[in-house]
Length: 277
Ligand SMILES: [Zn+2]
Image (cartoon, rainbow, N blue to C red; front, side):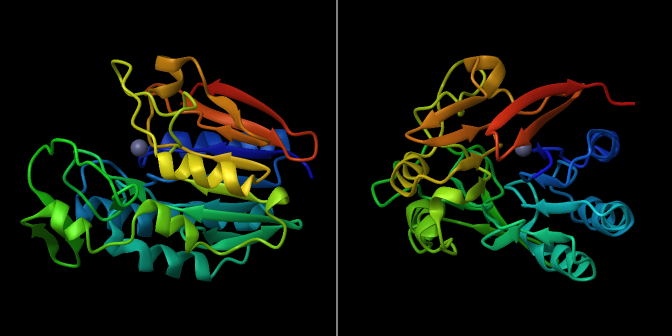
């Protein structure tokens, strides 16, 4: 397999999308994986809808034309109400797929994605879940909401409501099961705990113990994560191992594009910072 690229947390930054495409062409990548948080930040319906229709649709068509596979997750900052729109965009392009909660095979390698994340203090809860049954909720900044077609619906008692949803542990169990897990690649927006991939500004780890336990048990070839942009800068770690599984969380930079160039046969990975025009 020729190289693939992994990018995550592009947050609607068009220059970073363009740079990813030009670098994919330049490096002869056969596949680009986008780890989620694809839309402009700010949770505005109009901004995200326009981003999908005016930018991402035509942009992904250029991958289709170039013969480069593209797998994308959504993330916790992408409004869940537009997931169907992303599916619609991808449906017309055989080389492009929305990977959230799905398995897609590329050159015999199964890729399995998940956009759900362990609960965080922020308002938009479309993707938020208790990590496991004994989850302890942190302080919340502002009122909890879910996206709807007409705006947001407030959740008066978030911990109670979250108790009615599957936990991250259960969401991981419910994912499609690859025929041979040791050859599979998991793309999970939230990072595992205890591996240095989950460190927020100030040094606090916020990763998912359920994700760590899942990776330790299933032992896929590779897991790719995002979500905590500053983690590699804070912990000094962007790549590590849980048992035999290589785990990567490259973070994302404000000024430059962070991209990982990977080769699955050699199991070699390079993290690069590319300037963005
Ligand atoms: Zn993000």
